[in-house]
Image (cartoon, rainbow, N blue to C red):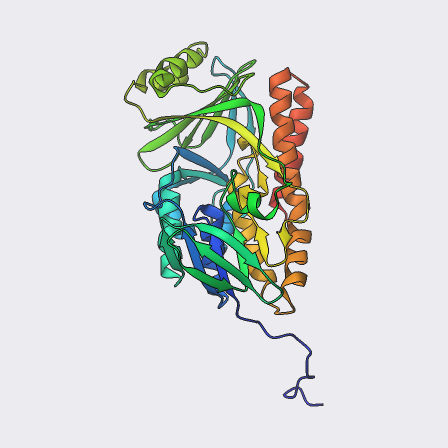
Length: 387
């Protein structure tokens, strides 16, 4: 048979699905962008009418920048965020302990890591989501999901109802979709640590990620733009109790006091009661497989929320979106596609959640520093692997 007459049925045709994404966070928006790129019809509902993203800065590894490149937002990110190579580890007095290399996973021309303000990253993704032709419904979420063999009927908070081929739950750590479809799923677990983050003007000397490692407290900084940086501090807190925002400045100032490094004290002097300070107890979740039931699949923090010890929570959620869009393409049936998606994602996501959790445990118990270094190295090598 001549090459111009391919064998019939040699390759299933790409199939267009009508897809609903519930949740307009990083993984939900990434899914919308990538699915539209591949010709799928996409609606996205987001409960917050202002589509806001809260928080200060977010540190990103090379694997995240690789995902940005695939999504088409790497150039805008490099314009408004900040990318640099290496992480400098220092003692509380400022002596350099080590320089951790960050391989250039996203390409020889792109530094190995970076950081950006969360709201700025959310804006970049939101602009790309709208530009992709996704239909976005703000101030809306589902009230009921009912599925049969052929599709999913979803009722919304405005009373309307629409039918879809697939529903993607991307509504975060406290997911209502997870609750509705997997009532037996585990709930988020407090890790025994909390993180403080503050946005500050960036001194010239802060042009890469730096971390001062104390006996119980870790302080770090990362540039997020040409003019700003964010400071983060991880502390052990036995109980997950409410901390009044009025106390944020006083408590963070006291936590920074023991670090005699001149740069830490310079940054401490920049903090004021008016500074933008965010406090967050660290919680984690790893939902056992399956991550889908029938025509509903969960991605991102809904199934694998991680503490920030490997700076990879947003990364693995965005990767979920890219892999899911890819696996839906062959058009050989949803169940096969969703199985392949889970097969490709489970081990990597489990590794990030469990290794991040273990790093936190070692920090809390003052455990073996060599094990900490070993886990860090193995995890970062694993994250550099192709997705």
